[in-house]
Amino acid sequence: MARVALVKGEDPLETTYKALDLIRAYMFFSSSDRVLVKPNYIVANKPEYGEVTDPKVVEAVSTYLLNHGVYDITIGEGGLGPDTADKAFKLLGLRDFAAKHGFKTVNLNLDDYVEVKLPNALELRSVKIAKTALSCNAIVSIPKLKVHRLATVTLSVKNLMGTLHDKGIMHSNIHEKLIDLFRILNPRFAVVDGIIAGEGGEIGSTPVKMGVIIAGNDLIAVDAVCAAIMGFNPMNIEYIKKAHEIGLGTGDLNNIEVIGGSIKEVRRNFRIEGLSFSSISRFIREKL
Image (tube, rainbow, N blue to C red; front, side, top):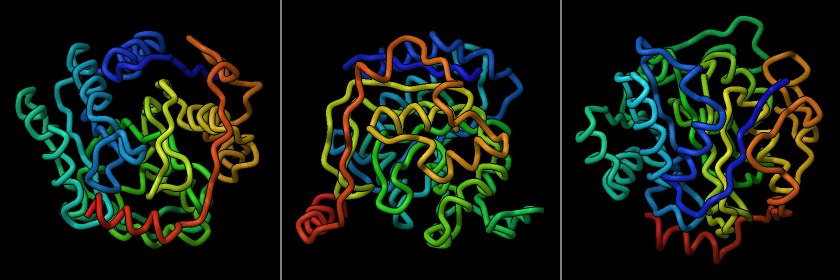
C-alpha cells in the first residue's frame, strides 16, 4: 500500500520538515544521488497568489536532503518565458540560498537539450528534455496545489513539463503525454505546496488558504491525494487512472495510506473556470 504524508500547518518551512520526517523521506535517497529539485515557477511571482511554489518549501526540501548526506543538489525550473526561472530565483531569494549552501540553480529553458526516444510511448515517441534533468538520477517534484484548465489538476506529474524544450507539445492528448514524460524521467519523490493553493486555473489563479503539505515517493498516489483534497475523484482524472492501471503508481484512494492528517478534514471543492479578461489583465500586470 502506498503511503502519503499530509501535514497541516501555516509555516511552510516547519510544515515541510514535519511532512518529510513523517514519511521518512531520507529512506528514498543516498549520498551518491544527484538531485534535481523541481519547483513550479510558471511565472516569477510570490507564492501568496496561489500560482507558484513557496521558496521556503524548496529550502526545506533542499536542506533536509543536505542534512541527510545528499550534497549534489540542483534547483531547476523552466517557466513560461526564457528568463522566467532566473527572475523567480532572484525574486524569491533562491539564488542566494543556493549559493550559501553550495547548491546550483539552473534555468532549464536555457539548458542544453537531449532528444529522448521512448519505446512503446502512448504519444511522446521523441521529445527534447533539459540535459540537467536527465543527468540527475533523482528528481524531487515540488509543485503548487492547484487546478488546471486542461488536465483538471497540475501537481507533481504535470510539474515535470518544466524540463521540456517545447512545453506546447503537451497540450493535445495531455494525459497520455504526462504518462510518457513520467516514464522518461522516473521522478523519485514529491512534495506539494498546499500552504496557499490556487483555484480557477493554472495562471490567473485565485489563492486559497489550505495550510497543508503533501509528500511521498509514489507521485501518482501523491497526486491522487491532492486531487481528492481539491474535491476531485482522482480516478476520474485520466493520467492518474491510466498510471494506476498500468502499474506506474497508486491512484485508488482505497490503496493509499494517508498519514499525519486526513483528506476529509482539509477537503475543499476547487472550481475551474475559463481564463477571463480580468485574470489575463491581472496576469500581465502583476507577473510580466
